[in-house]
Length: 199
Image: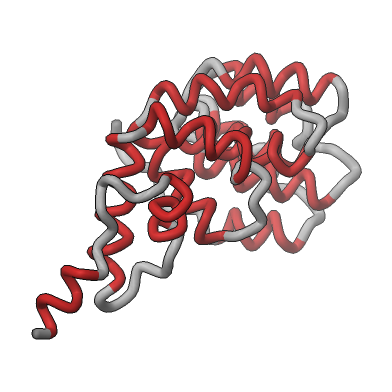
């Protein structure tokens, strides 16, 4: 009976996109794990329908659970990622920043050009600096280098964190140039820097 009850909770592929997304954005704990995974599978299978719904209704979410559902779709749907690019210039700043983070999460190197333009406009600076952590390119590291001595401690810490996470060969040497930074946060990050591994 318990097995049947859990099976009954699984979303059906014919459910509305709104219902499927709601299931995909639930906590992945206990018996809900399979329900959430199934819902995310259906979202991917029905991406053509899901993407317009998400772009219209969910891109400006403040919910961490809904954001994880968006991440799951972005990881599997290039079409979704492509359609996020126009949202970077969205009037809704939360939708723009979520789009930025989602694209960065899949490591799309084309994002570096959009980030460069946003930084030139002084828009979403913290989100842009964070996004550069996932773009493995020399240009991404060059953009970060412009903020290593910025007056804002917050910016410098985000730069240091992004350099630590960035896998481009030039990222670590640049991070090490910040060893004299006066910020306690930057110093703490440098002290906990993992040892360099061979490629």
